[in-house]
Amino acid sequence: MPAPPSASPSSPSRPSRPSVVAALRAAGCVFAEDEAELILGAARTPAEAAAMVDRRRAGLPLELVLGWAEFKGLRIAVEPGVFVPRRRTEFLVDQAVAQAPDAAVVVDLCCGSGAVGAALAAALGRVELHAADIDPAAVRCARRNIAGHGGRVHEGDLFEALPGELRGRVDILAANVPYVPTAEVGLLPAEARDHEPLVALDGGADGLEVLRRVAAEAGRWLAPGGCLLIETSEHQAPSAVDAFTRAGLTTRLAVSEELYAHVVIGVGALVG
Image (tube, rainbow, N blue to C red; front, top):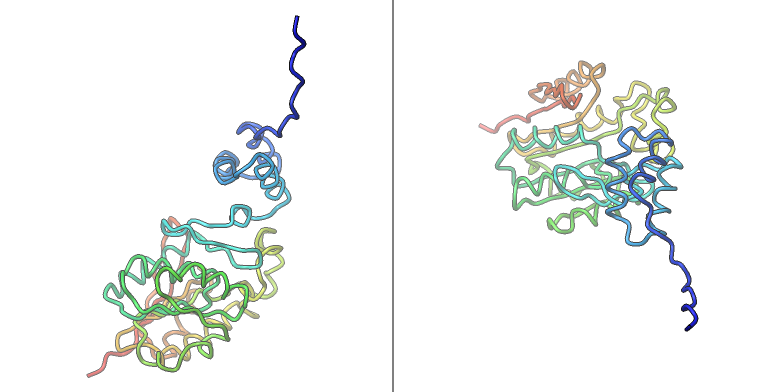
């Protein structure tokens, strides 16, 4: 009787969905089932799947584990050290498109990954798109995300980063500025506090320092009737509206109860 064939070296087996769900749930992931589906769908090998699960269990944000975040139906590349776009910020994009559906020039200030700029370009069609951030890591990431829209990304502090030729031409100025008060940064969830850059979170003593700087200078960059949109919190909204009004903008507050999103919208003066 012939001898049985020798056993071949066993290759690592792909983690099962139930085992991944159990591991993520034990780590405190509220949406363990959905996260397991995404991780197993993204992993190319069993070893990669196991490593991704381990990184998520260690507290790395899911988006950084995957390497992308979904935003307005787009897959936005994200990298370690770059602010991860939030779903509530989709409301800012919707408000911008509703306010200026024929916008030709769009600026995404404090752009982070460039998610807002990419989403606006996707919604509006052919636009002249610019994005800017003070953080070199964010600039590199944003270039990946808006390259397909023909956009340009600039590095620098707020308006100092932008080409002077944009003055008086911007139809939509979206600025997702940091708005967490300095004393409250330490109270943020660990995923933000430990993995996102402080410059993208800390808005100064009352959380509105960067917002005031942007509002004060926005009028010089907006086209006639152009709009500035900035996300803020519910309790900061009255002060944010006041900052816009003091800057000479016609101002209103838009609120989404579903997304718990608050966006201040300021419109520049029309000529004539």
